[in-house]
Image (cartoon, rainbow, N blue to C red; front, top):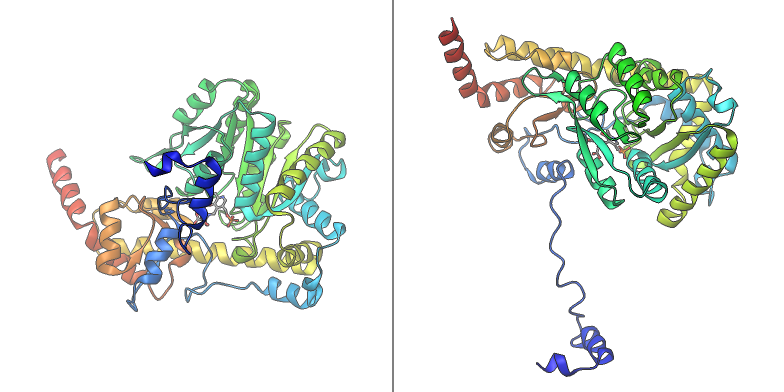
Amino acid sequence: MYWRYLTRAARRCSVHTTSSRTVGWWDHVAPAAKDPINGVTEAFLADPSPYKINLGVGAYRDDKGRPVVLQCVREAEAKIAGSEFLESISASVSTKMVEESVKLVYGKDSDVVKEGRSAGVQALSGTGACRLFAEFQRRFHPESHIYFPDPTWSNHHNIWRDAQIPERTYHYYDPDSKSLDFAALMDDIKNAPDSSFFLLHPSAHNPTGVDPTEEQWREISYQFKVKGHFPFFDMAYQGFASGDLDKDAQAIRIFLEDEHLIGCAQSYAKSMGLYGHRVGCLSILCVDSKQAAAIRSQIQQIARAMYGSPPVHGILLVATILSDPNLKSLWIDEVKIMADRIQRKRTTLRQNLEKLGSSLNWEHITNQLGMFCFSGLTPYQVDRLAKEFHIYMTQDGRISMAGVTTGNVNYLANAIHEVTRSEQETAKILCSISV
Ligand code: KET
């Protein structure tokens, strides 16, 4: 009652000063839902078991489970020693980093860079690049939606929600066949309103590890042309699907051939092991250099208001590696080494499950590509793995294969075998009925 009789100014004053601790301002703020990926890391860190394994976050680890500093990064560090104390990097370093990034997308001989048709800006890793694009989309196409594959990286939902762009989904993964539902995907592309925005994973789809074939990409690109859709590629794992940077950009190159205007987010978190440095690039392919200049200035303005400018050190590292032929070829070799290590672990995990006599089909472990295995484990089985075996992964059963090592792969296979026993019994019964 007393509150109602106070003037507005007195109320404000009362909120601020009723006690030494201010009250009122944030009483309505409830805790946010746990992030599905960061929540896994938190649970892993809180577990004191010496046997624990983190298969949650998609960041590269070596065969001892340690984060990796690539040799090309060490050598670039030596080259740039001291320059990180610069307040900001020169425009030429930033331009170089963006130009070299765009060449990774479209190919080193592509005319896109020469013609100045790409509006590229450095971004705070892949997340920042997506966030900048979502904001740009909202400003210049405020009525638009974004189509995500079902499923997609969990943070895509947050990023476009925060930019106030409503999301829709298109069919992607078929859980029964554990492969791409291409027919349903094509139907969704055809049935979406003309000129819709689509987010596409060009390679090593997260979380499923399932990518369209080259032929399927050609059909997708053709249908995008027919419908006038805008393709936005989120390329966070270039090199991790095939071990070859160009091959992993093949989908985008097909869209380039078909003369689409294209958006692309790039991240060096995984491909250069620079997760903590937050280096990425957002580029938008334009009709000409004049349009590119306008678009670049708009994105730069968005970035300026969001975070000023990105950290200097990571950009110097990336620019140094990409513009030095020796360091670049060392990097290309190291990407292949990382991709091959993951591939070998897929084979070992599958073999171990088969050796244990699992009656389930584990072919998808080796059929899928990139950093993740979409295992098919249920949320209940994922919980059992955490509680009984100290093995942590996201609730959707996604295994970050980068966390699988020579030392833990047997233990992991045994644990998966244990938690899937009842499913194996059911499979056997179904099999005997159908015989
Ligand atoms: N796109 C995709 C598809 C993606 O998987 C990630 C990261 C990002 C963008 C952003 O990466 P950045 O670190 O901002 O460059 N995914 C893994 C890491 C994370 O979620 O932080 C993951 O799915 O585990």
